[in-house]
Amino acid sequence: MKSIVDPSALVIDLGAQKRPTVISVVGAGGKTSLLFWLAELLQASGRRVLITTTTHMFMPTSHWPVVFCRDPAMLPHASLTSPISFCFHSWKANQGKVQGFTPEAIDALVQRPECDVILIEADGSRGMPLKAPDEHEPCIPKSSCCVIAVMGGHTLGAKVSTENVHRWSQFADITGLTPDATLQLSDLVALVRHPQGAFKNVPQGCRRVWFINRFFSM
Image (cartoon, rainbow, N blue to C red):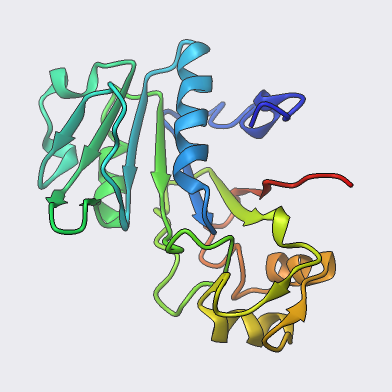
């Protein structure tokens, strides 16, 4: 993240006419780290940030407060006043993960006045550096004004297969690649441009950010 020349370019002017700003992060591994980095960046600019998910994510180990509830729209005011906080539906101890809310529940949460920014992990990838969405994915709230699609840049020039691609069947259908084929930049572009690809289910008028993680120039 430190190699980004101007981090504010990711979110500049977002939500200028609406509050809170709702940012959903989808795609491959690295989403949670990106969410935490964005939270600190936005909080440093004076914004109050809430982090949640529409799927599952590992239990945060940071010092920021974590709140569990059935309906985030009904949370007491004091639960949402921390500079950065987490809010989830439930805790799955046997998996070490938390369960989030439906996109509709987050759309209702947007009506609350406490938060300036809501950051959402809206997709799962089992930590793999590449993925294509299944029929039910990603789970993006309609209130999102920005969707960031994450891909692993270190896979360029490498062989791809079920070992490093989540939802291989869908990925192969979109890119035309076969197992152990060498990944090219054009394949990632195909994933971005395809209606069933990286930006599937993005609300109309929503900003789209293609985030290539772990990209090293040779």
